[in-house]
Image (cartoon, rainbow, N blue to C red; front, side):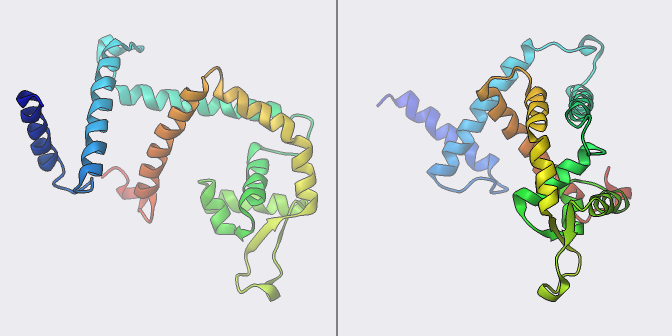
Length: 213
């Protein structure tokens, strides 16, 4: 085997040991390979980034500024598609069907869990839940069967109204993904999931006054 190759490999192993002081990677060949793969990905990303242009880049506009603008715009586009999906239906807002979808997909949960899953403030979330209860689309679990008095689940009526509207809701979600290829959609899921997990850790039991620290 070429001696220069072995020398370079030894050098990479040394870099790995230095970079892995925090033990982000396992101290074995598996961890080493993962580190190598990420270094390659970062190198490729740097190459691609140099070729990417965005509005204001020539004036020093940062990638972070572009990211937040695009996310805000995408959220607004998604909201408009959702509005179109529930036109002429019994739904008042997109939150109505999102809450029902969560209950149908994940089963009964406490009101606080349902609100938290949708990243709402308690007051706002309770208003949505009360609206769904008034329409008979969700109902509390019998407290006799559970020690948790605020458990709720989707009702048969809620499932029915959701089923009626699901075709339109699927059309809306499909439109949001636009013309991305399947591989691009999977890559976007990977990136957004990483970002989501980061923010979950930041917001968990965090005082809003300390968010920017």
